[in-house]
Length: 599
Image (cartoon, rainbow, N blue to C red; front, top):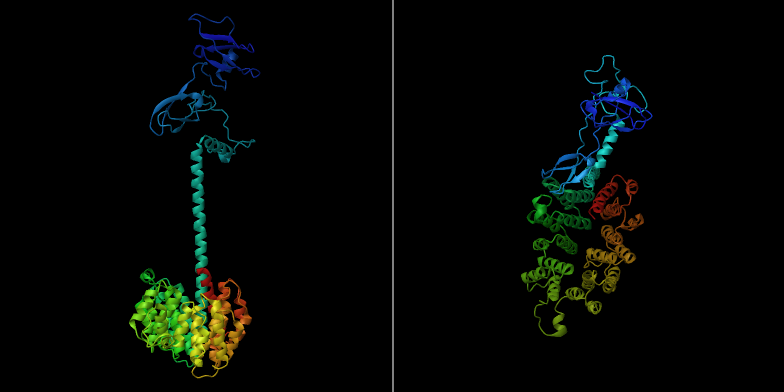
């Protein structure tokens, strides 16, 4: 039995099989193409009165539009929660969308319904033998034969867009964050790698530069220059040391520097050994540094330090070195080291007193206990430094008599230094006037040194008075050590009295002491501003670097200062004499670059 009816829109006639009864289809008329209901069977014997239209039957059979179910209750799609496995059904109209699980409220994507496609007679395994095969020839928007078996790029992009469109915002955010983090890690790794390579290359160049500087002077006949360049090399190796072998190498350089300086005669020997001793303190390390072998323990450094100081031949130069060593050891929180050095020197009580006074100057609260231990070890010592330490600690020995008579039993040097440490400057100058020239100069210098950090304005006239005495009464006075003059030059440099300091240095007994005095004034100029370029003209007063040890040391220090201030000083160094002077400029630049990195 067949179903015969007309399209209600365009009146075209259809004759269809019984199996299509009650369904809907699309009209085959190209001008219509509207949805039409297929009538249901009325009864077993019912038939249409109209004639059979074979064309209509064929058109319906071969129509591209699938036959759809008659409108009715909306279809449902069964869903299983990806979070809690709860099973429930949702409307088919939500396919491809996200819905929340009624149990755990987790978002789930509704899968699309399986579409039952109408069999296509043009494809499949039973297609006609002469059916046309689509080879994907080059039509606009179509793929070429090279794309056979794959997906067109535009189609793939569309699929990705549709997939992204249905993703939860939280999922997309996590994906973007993950991709961003991966990119950041890659960039950081790349940056760190480049930085490491640059740093390694820079350190290699620096190692080479310092080695070249040492090599240039290694065979020099002038032991002063050999000792000074090895001291610079040792400091560089200490600051760069990362393991035991490098630390031992730095120690060997210092030993060579010290042993080379010992046979030197005159003031250069004392000046160079003082520089070596202060550098030796850099080898001292804390517990962590010692464990990592980047520095040495006290018992390894102490013998080296003692040898350098014991080789010095001037008591005032030795006292200067002890004060500098004490300050350096305090920076490393090892105040007992200079005490152990002082006990092995020719005049231990005076040197121990100098250690105690310097610790008191640095931090009287922190180091008061150490100063009291020093006094307790020599309760009746009469040396000026020990007397001054007892006075400032309130531990003065009982004197005969009373008042002024008792007070004057302490040396003028001790009274002046103790008064300055206590901030009492009114009577220092007048009290010192009654002493002999040498003691008077020492008293004023000691008071200036004691108060220069906390009371620079009050000590300025005292230091200036000491300078005038040195330039007049103290000139060529055999009882006044040139190192007292050098000490006063240092104080004038710190106070910014550069002209007076340079004038004083010129009156010192010989070229070597004059140059060391000028070096102290020069250091005062450098200390004005560590970030500002130092002028080459400042070097002139220090003297000829080809002949004077202090002068060549000043070349190292100006190059170091300018490199530390990030000033390109290489061209200046290249203009210096290659034989003796240029290596010190090279060493100074290397050390200055280290200073800049450590700030």
